[in-house]
Image (cartoon, rainbow, N blue to C red):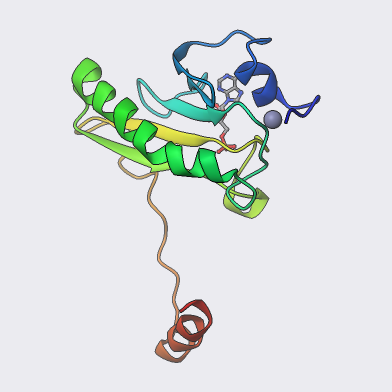
Length: 137
Ligand code: AMP
Ligand code: ZN
């Protein structure tokens, strides 16, 4: 499954060069060209899926073990103090590249993202919390 006009399909397929830190049959892990912090990487499935809603079952199953492997490597190689996993789906959630990808962002004590990668709290009344709860459970 490949989409002709998709930049991450081209990167995953090796047509566009990237700093590939890991590759197997299903995934390519690359360094983000505009890193939030030093060592920011993206796990990209080789098959095209727009987002989490359509991600293949095998990719979904194998994604988190791979994230753990890469995160461990980051901790060893970069001595990061923490790490954020970020994964955006849809314009409303700030997804800019419409090919599923998982961000792995190493964090360093006192780094320059102290005010970012943090969401603002929404005001939600108790009654609405219960209404949402009844829809989700
Ligand atoms: P998102 O906003 O979650 O869709 O993230 C897209 C990410 O892809 C951004 O962090 C970009 O910096 C990154 N990106 C876009 N083009 C490239 C590229 N050619 N090589 C590496 N990273 C890229
Ligand atoms: Zn694609």
